[in-house]
Amino acid sequence: MTQSQHEAIAAPSMVVERQRRAKQRRTLFYLALIAVGLVAPFLAYPVFLMKILCFALFACAFNLLLGYAGLLSFGHAAFLASGGYVTGYLLASYPGLTPELGIIAGTLSATLLGVLFGVLSIRRQGIYFAMVTLALAQLMFFVYIQAPFTGGEDGLHGVPRGELLGFINLSNNMAMYYFVFAIFLFGFALIQRTVNSPFGQVLKAIRENEPRAVSLGYNVDAYKLLAFVLSAAIAGLAGSTKTVVFQLASLTDAHWHMSGEVILMTLLGGVGTLLGPVMGASLVVSLQHLLAQSPLGNWVSVILGIIFVVCVLSFRSGIVGELAKMYRKNFK
Image (cartoon, rainbow, N blue to C red; front, side):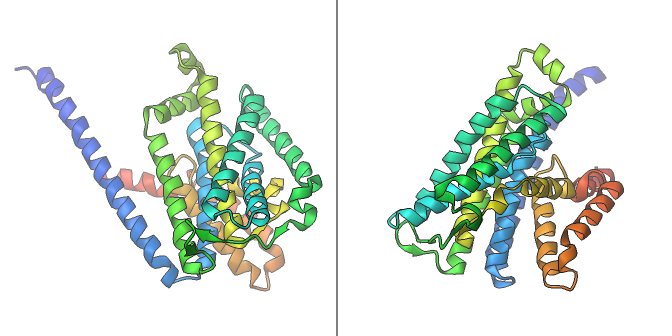
């Protein structure tokens, strides 16, 4: 038997072995993530951890669009705010409504808004796509200022947490934390499954070389629209959950600053990596919390900007991206 024949026989077994190892790594990762999540509220303030989880889910949703489809959206704050406002309004107006139904309703509203935004913007590329999403998000910002159900500049206050499934009292911060953690795990697992599916591979092909994907017969616009809508839905889920946690929905979530903040989180952690947005969101939220309690509280934005510039110049792939490169270089 020739060497080429040996290689042809060995190739499939090598692929199977790599898939088996990848599956083992994913299993170990999820076990470690669940273990850390279960222990975390005994080591840190649960409300602070819930804020990190909500923004981490938001950043993961944005990363699905930018990191895997190559679409830079400057309007993702609109989906975060839409989910939050709809959930807050329903829970405040209908006391008998359970929080899970309110969150589902908020997520659906963000999904529908994502369909509208996507249909209007998806045929544009690059900076034109970014500017269209920014314009649409600003339109929604001014709608939320004027709409009677949002409370205008005052926002929605006193949104009840209610009882999960009708019997678990979410006024207890520990119960609320584990509910938020379960939502985060669901959203993260959905994104992980999406990017590792055939659909995710097509998205990566579109990101790398869109004309070639078109020449292979893929309906590029349909794939990008579906990615956009899925990203909007998960962002809405994060916004709905955040409103229940803090019992508040405000214009801050709809402002373009929030769209810039999620870009900062994603780039800082690592675009195109699953853990990057989680790392970036954790760092940004933690720094905001620490700096706000220090004499440098008025300089939070400036300090975050300096850290962002330093990180981009030092490791362009983000924190997790650079760590992944080091791992591949030293252990493979």
